[in-house]
Every structure is written in structure tokens, then in C-alpha cells.
Amino acid sequence: MAMEARDIESMIKEAIPDAQVTIQDLAGDGNHYSATVISESFRGKSRVQQHQLVYQSLKGQMGGVLHALALQTGVPE
Image 1 (cartoon, one colour):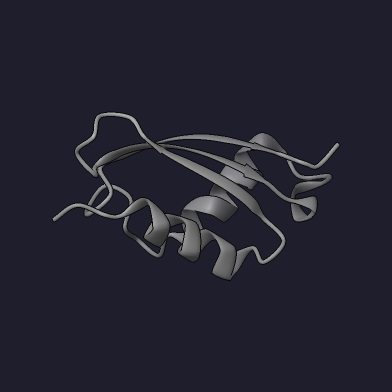
Image 2 (cartoon, helix red, strand yellow):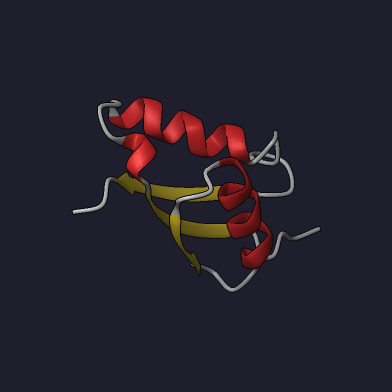
């Protein structure tokens, strides 16, 4: 079963309320996405810590319903 882009965005925004989230379906199959997540809460955190926060927000869906997520994170300019 595929995961909808809006569901991914909702899960991220639920966990990181100030996040600006952009999701793209890379293969058109609902399983391979890229996400750009920008949040002030990432300031002072390493890239690994930022990615961990996003993966935690997906509540175990990575590797299951959501097969692949190319992730870019950052802080607002």
C-alpha cells in the first residue's frame, strides 16, 4: 500500500509544527519521495539530528509503507 504525499506532510507538520514541507513523488508510485523540511527547531542541530527528527515524525512508516525518502533539511534564512 502506497503512502500519500499529503499524509507524509501532515505527519511531519504534526511533529514539527513550524516546518515548511515540500514533498515530491519521485517515481509516481507513492513509494519513492523526496522531502525538503525547513524548521527553526533544526537550528544548532547537526544534519543527522535534523534527519532523525523527521524520521521520528513518520512513526515507523519508513521502510514499510514508505519505501524511500530522499531528505533535505535546513533552517530558515
